[in-house]
Amino acid sequence: MQHMLFNRPADTPQARYVIELMTLAYKELGYDVHIIDFNHQSALSAANNGTLDGQLGRVASISQQYQNLHPVNFALFEFNLVLLKNCQQCTFEQLDNIAIQVGYPAAQSYLNEHPFIGDIIKVKSVTAQLNLLTQGKVQGVILLDFLLSTKHPQFNVKQFQTEILAPIKSYHFLHSRHSALIPKLEKELHKLNENGTVRLLRAKHNLD
Image (cartoon, rainbow, N blue to C red; front, top):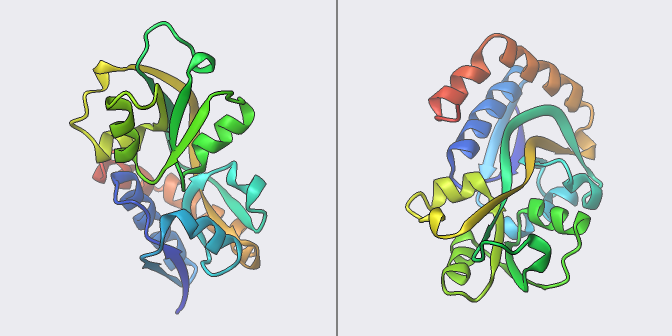
């Protein structure tokens, strides 16, 4: 059996669901999914240059910067990009500074489309973002709501103002050398959706 190599994503219910779903889809095509520990910040570049075979789940906008990565047209799950800010009346544009997490392109893509004139502090984790916000060192943070709820379920969100910036969908990506697999994977994923497997996996990982 041939194998496909991907980096291990952050351990969340969404990631476990995606791994299980894509493993099933690839198995139907005669491929075994191999997942390795890999630096998350450099995983996109590694996938783009072919060191990895693709990305298990990423936002659609990564294709703009990583042109060797192509999406499989099947939305894996949906989530929100949110802004937590420590002022009630101020808007996103009025903040003096914000913190974003490197390695998750959704925030950077939003900033590319909505230019921010304040300071942008880039950190390596949600924990670092929340620490800066709690300590008053930044006025806001942009992050993915599912990372907040799964990695920091005890964090008191109510002490800050929450604004949903954009709904986002996650897709599976493959390096261009595997482009022939894309329509086959789309067919298998739609089949798994139609026979109820996707729904069962989502329920198993408490995503509904």
